[in-house]
Length: 364
Image (cartoon, rainbow, N blue to C red):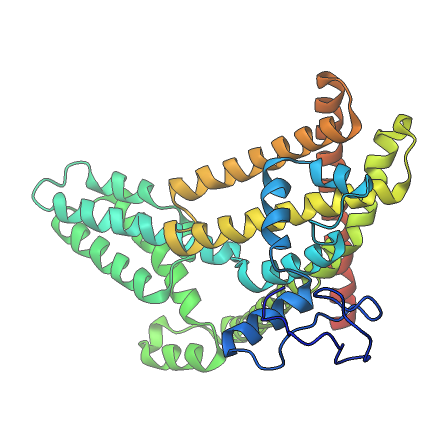
């Protein structure tokens, strides 16, 4: 406990005599009332989460010795460790505050932008020798990747392709420009106002007919609604993830109990093991996910390696913890480890589908 202990032996809370640092009647520490600012902050946070030195005594074995803390806790060796539920709540709060949930659209945009950068460099490098550039330019980036670019990047790429075409005409490159031009025009028409403005700027012969005009207006409206609903649903699903993890944890403990029913131990013991495992997963993710997004970039090779390493760590953690805690053979533990991963993955996907369906129904 941080702080300076009082020399007086009367408890300020209940008035009883204090033999040591804590009152034997009410349990309050016999600390001085006045303390420095940072001591006050550290004491408050530590007291609220029941931390102090317990945090590091719990964290190190939790990450390096899967299953050992659960064995100690169930054996009654609890004074040195933070209570499983208190630790889980604290770490899960940090997880959902820190871990970025990158959208797939952002990821694909980032990948496409990198390809455009490569393409720009290639075009500049081949300005004098354009023999193979048209086909190369068309194959370098797909229509979907072009669609995922923002409008300035699309305009820049089309401008580069048109310059290339003017120097070395090619049917394949002309077709590519035509396809990209159409995608670019459609994406510029993201609102009715922009569409109407673009139509007015075109020569009369190139404007949409009355039927096409009405159809396009309806399409823009539906696309706007669809995109808004899709984004709202994704955001709502993300809000429910803390509850989803929390509610699925007892189910994972049930799966473990079924797979290790021959051990004949109480369900609560399986649940404590599961809580410790889920807490370790959150801690690893708190470190790995920000590194992937903010340091290396979501589409980098390093981020891909980190993803593989995190999955390998999850498999290793489950295998090692299950083997130590349930004392089964190597073959049985490996088989049950992958069975549990598959069961949890299916359950997580189904629960997310249910949440998404309920949100869609409520938003309809």
